[in-house]
Image 1 (tube, rainbow, N blue to C red):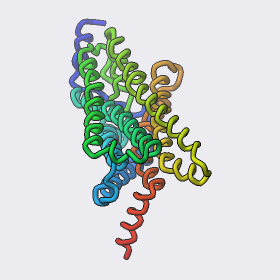
Image 2: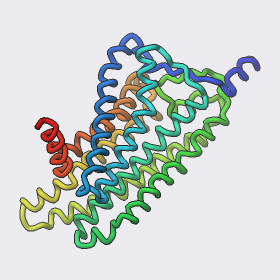
Image 3: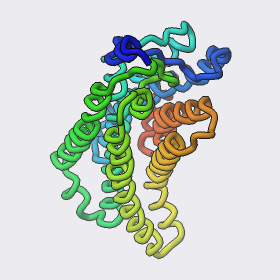
Image 4: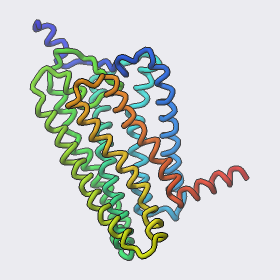
Length: 315
């Protein structure tokens, strides 16, 4: 390759996002469920925030963490969907290099943040079920605020090396990203240098940050399940399990696909590219839509406040 071609993409001013490679003709049709998911996610998470903020009885640790999760979901949707829909509808795949790095940072930062929020939720459920008499003295408002700040700072610091590592690589092959948004591993694969540092750091974040979160959650829920099964009656066990069932379902839906996608992208090279991209999109887009639905349906206090809200408007 000539020197002129090598320098052309060394610090590209723009990248080109392809959307879903191989399914370009179906982009308009694919945009319909994606747009629907976006609308439901925005409406659902804003509804959760409105209900918790306006209902004083919901001003407690579990609902504060739920608000953090809703805000994180809103940022994730806002970071990915608008650009994705512009690609599907207008074939507007060009994105500024700095904007691409910013999008990548926000996607990974708030994904790690959600992992931290799930740990905080698991701690709240553990104290609530295993030590209910001390719940109000352990998880005070200042303690919850400190946990929230720690979750935000940790995610911001852990993901901060991503854009700096990506910016230093030369891009002498192409500036085309076969994705509808910028993610770390997709940009690293475009570089024409030894990017093992970026790859190893990405694996570190997956296994030693989010993986450690998953371990703490597993330990918490092991203790929670032991406490539940030690209850004397079946009704008491079912009632107690109902208070953490939605959390457990959401947590499993977050960690299992995340691990599967990361391993699939790195090691399953024979899988068609459009399958990689579709699975990754579903993973990033479905949770922000499902979280408010799950918590709205399964959390009695939120469900009751929502019913009163609609009943009052209809009266």
